[in-house]
Amino acid sequence: MPENQPFVPVILGGDIGTYSLAREFHEAYGFVSVVVPAASNGVLDYSVATVVRPAGTMTEADVVVRHLQEIARDLSPNGERKLLLFGSLDLQVTLITRHREQLSDHFVIPYVDIDTMERAALKENFYELCAELGVPHPTTLAVDMVEHAEGKPLPKNLPYPLIGKPADSSAWVHAKFEGKKKIHTITDEGDLLSLLGRIAGSGYRQKFIVQEYVPGGDDHMRLCTFWADRPGHVTFASYGEVVVEEHSPIVLGNSAGIVTGVNEEVINHGVRLLEALNWEGFGMIDAKLDPRDGQVKFFELNPRLGRNHYYVTATGHNVARFYVRRYLGEEYDAANAVSTENGSYQRVGDVDAANAELLYTVLPMPLLRKHLRGPVGEKAKRMISAKRVVNPLIYKAEKHPRRWAYVAMNAVNQVRKFRQFPPRTS
Image 1 (cartoon, helix red, strand yellow):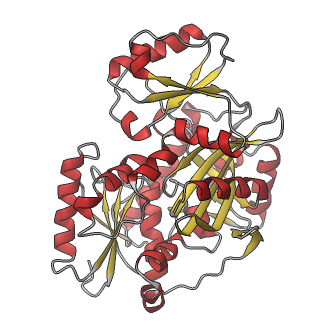
Image 2 (cartoon, helix red, strand yellow; image 1 turned 180 degrees about the vertical axis):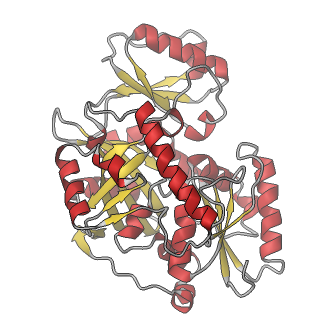
């Protein structure tokens, strides 16, 4: 770690979102980030943008907190160097927020308080707020797992097929049972009862969300990243339409290709939600275009940047600079920036909406081309023809041969995964 680096990003996580954020700080300031996965892995190793300090676990909060405190003492023994602390997944952001008192003496924490976070991140709370504000969302039932275990019956005549997912994704990490998935498709009542029985046996005691299935393939998925520079004051949005998702069980539902653009209706609905929550910092909406009525139905609010958030930076609005300006001060940005921002935007209400059009992907191009469908696929083809394509793993500043060997092997593994777990088309 360079001694003259005036601040250090410390990033919990070990996925492509972790690497992307480290890359963004390196692009913006030339600075190195300390990344803290459970264990070293290829996506983080041998990078010009990272120093890897594995914690050994991500599920034992006390161990992670002590490890972070030790890192802080190493990086800033006198407390003079600023340390920004981030999480890559809900589990890690929740850990940081719940242990704010133990961590805030060492780190600047760019997240809302735990009460605000749970109001947004717990899905039953999110759907209640959507209903209150008139934001389109799927018909939803929140099953109380404690009451279900005690014998409370389910409502009759549920509209099968259904989608099932945990209300609390951070608690879901600890649930262990046969057939566990990130998102479950439920065909009938017997299937639902069997699933709930296995969940109850796993020790998961939070609510479990059961909701109507919104038809449509991967290319119907939508997302939008928002920034609020102070509580309840949203100033920026970056919208994307999913080209294709990953479907292997561990990463099911993660975007593998996104085309950027502007959707005023989605942005306006998202702004109303975040303002009602008195939100500050970044948040990301997951949604889906319902072909039955043409509405974009809101699924959830992630209380952080998404795994594939680099699509925002690719439009010319580097997310690292948002964090530094707000949480460290304009002077830190002005004194240390080594890149200039070139992103364009259009006004949507009182919000600056990124309007650069490009294709973001984590897939090798021949594989992506096989999965271009519908209007979103046509947009992607235009971006490919115009050479407006970005991949967060392909960073010219990287020099180590083993880094580029990982990038090549990752492309091969993507082909294997897509062959074994093909995308959804309906």
